[in-house]
Length: 137
Image (cartoon, rainbow, N blue to C red):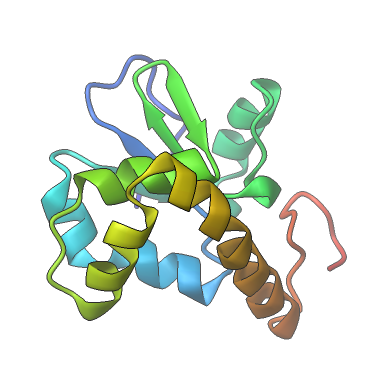
């Protein structure tokens, strides 16, 4: 997980996740996620202020959820997770359950708020703010 700004017109998709959230980190680092999506790069957005600033300038904030950058397209929140789940070929139990549930846009929109709630709780328990650009939870 490198800490450099997002490459312009990268031929590989980039997942930006919140490394402060244990659920997000676990999802992001599962090897099945990488193996199912050729060339997928993964970055901890909480640790990469330059990338967060680049995305915020385009109107995308880590506080609102994970992002997938695919060429010039930025998918944020439920569409990002749906994009990933629709392309994975998981073998891990967690991903075998999550991928089919989140693989369609309608289900991703319905279920994503639950993932955000779990993230908020996990971050609060760790004393971390939902928005890494704020100093207080």
